Structure formats: structure tokens, C-alpha cells
Image (tube, rainbow, N blue to C red; front, side, top):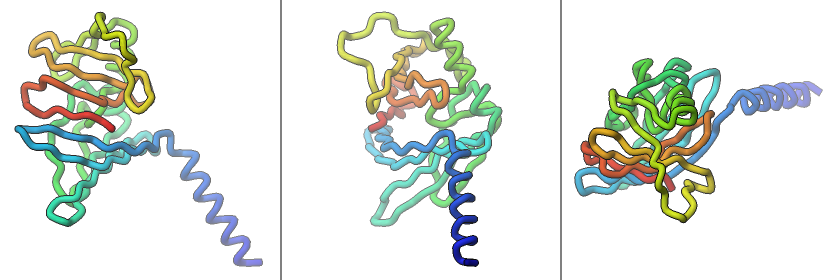
Amino acid sequence: MMKRIISLGLLAVLLTMVANAQINEKYKFVYKLHGQTRNYEVCITEQQDTIRFEWSILRNFKWQKGCYKMGKQNVENGNSLSWLQPVDGCEVALPANETFGFISRKAWKSLKENGWFIYNGTTYRKVVKEPTEKQECNGKKVIHVSADVDLTNMWIVDNEDLPLICKTSNNPLEIDWTVE
């Protein structure tokens, strides 16, 4: 009887944890930087107003991993992308204005309502003339934007919960990525 009660208790805790996770998605991010390619496995989860961007990569026959954490302020109102290079074993809490791999919900709302948003002090505008093929990332609709000043392109998943940047090109930092 006691084992049954403990099992039911553990099941209730597990179900509560699953119910509290609004986002739980896995991706492969393929980064192209300075002529090199890096493939990162990424798991993005949201629990209790914090998004965890957990990454791992096989380098030199060893798995390296780490995490970027973003609280409610980042997720809702961030206005800057973090360009911190991943460091093995580090869990980094980003400053309140930064996001990693996605834009804030405030920026997404501006994009949807106005056709533009500002990130890192740069205005990104929705590209009006699109090719005839479907603009999708892993079966999800995307919005293509281009920066006013340097013509950086981003394709952002059209999802308020997680406006993931699924592709970049022409980044002057020479760091572009594609989500697979």
C-alpha cells in the first residue's frame, strides 16, 4: 500500500512539472561562423517564467554542454540579442534586456502590429516581397525581416510564445544560423 501511495505521489509531481512547462522543444542549430560550421543540439524549455536554452555539441569526441537562462523580463521585454559564445559547463543568466536565439514577445507584437521591431538598436522590417514558396521552419510559419542598416536577414517563427529566430543571413558579425 505504501509503495502505491509513493508511486501516486511521484506521478502527481511529474504531471505537475509537465503541466507547468509551457515550452518544451528540441532543435538542431547549425551555426556558420568565420567559415566554420558547428552543429548544436538545443532543448528549449519554459518553466515558471524562465526560458532555458540548453545546448550541447560533440567536440573532440566529448559532449560539451551549457545553458542560457532568461527570466520573465527577458522573455517579455528583451530588446537585444546575446552573442555570448557557449562555454562548456556554464549556465549563464542573461541580463534582463537580452534573449538568445529568439526575440522577445514585445518585439514579436511590434512586428505583428507595425511590421517592424527594434533589437540591438537596429530596426528590422518585415520583408514584403517574398518568394512564392512557403516560408516555414519545421512546419511552422515564419516572418522574414531585414535590418535597415546592414541588411541582416532573419526568419522568425510566427509564434508569440516562442518567436524563435530559425534562420539568419548577412550578419556583419559573420555568425549565421539555420534551425533544422
